[in-house]
Length: 176
Image 1: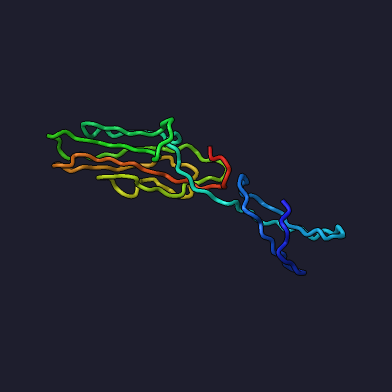
Image 2: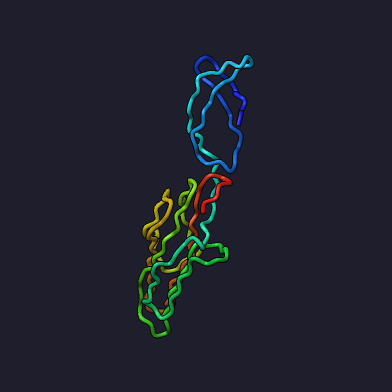
């Protein structure tokens, strides 16, 4: 790419780089070539690509353990179809159930090409703890993400959650 300098003098060069997609972060070199083909000293700069944020697809999440502490238990991750959440789970008791608690564990596949875990957001949740254990922003994978849950005895003998995990990386660059 040959961006036009916005200005320069004996000691500085100002260059505006247009929006670029499909490029990863990398070292770039800046030099000035005059009309008479004289080339300036080269200066190495760190180029940071434009960023985009995306939902981590459920196909990149693995369920390690799904607690069996209640009457009905389910944990969903690794689905082939695209969903609006990265993982989900639920635990329900029967009419005569007592209080229950447990935890479900997940891990994510490694992100590639400069992509990292950015943030999480609960799409829905009842009787779960916040934040999920093991969530680490700026990681390239989560080895053990833990959703702790509990429900008291009584009318609402259930716990459920739908969790979105957002990733960030260079725009137009694949993360898988």
